[in-house]
Image (cartoon, rainbow, N blue to C red; front, side, top):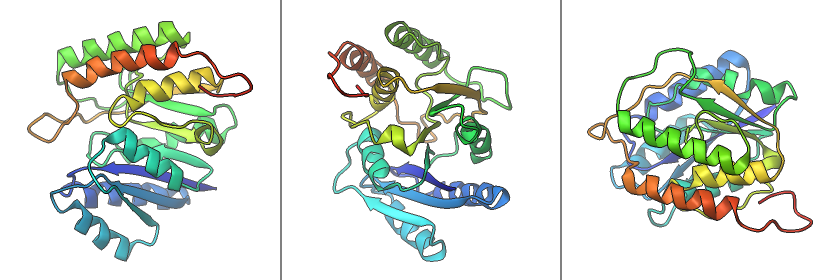
Length: 241
């Protein structure tokens, strides 16, 4: 089975070698046929040079470059379009999510039980860095509202660790450019009737001083996206939102 790991990158030169080492290490341990799609979202810190150096040593890497900085949603749109694996995993380029959790993330898909799997930072498993209280409050509010609109019972809609069967992504056209992609994907997966599982993951959160990018304006836009994509009239004859 070929597994595609899509890594959106924006100014992550310092962490790219380590995150790649961890992804490759887990891949070798489990005997995966890996494809690593790195999407450079017009970084300005030399990330493009680091990616090029890494690709020269690791043929598993495929590089996509955005002509201008557009955001995580746009990077995932490009990365998903390029990915060829039967299963596609989103891996952030920072060190907040540990690639050693990828096996548990994709296990329900490999077992034929799930089409989509979300990680969750709010169930007991592994270490979880203690950080911003109001971030967690906002996350839980958005997740609760998302669940009310989708009739799902997720605990962490905004989580960055998500895995999809390739067939699911073929039905979804990402419209959001930035972090609104998380509620958009959730709405469209739910409207498509796909089978969703959730598994606990560890979480090594970053501070803003360490490069965390999401802010309160993204939370407000996520609220808008919840209504935009969940209340949009369904297209007849389609299996997706």
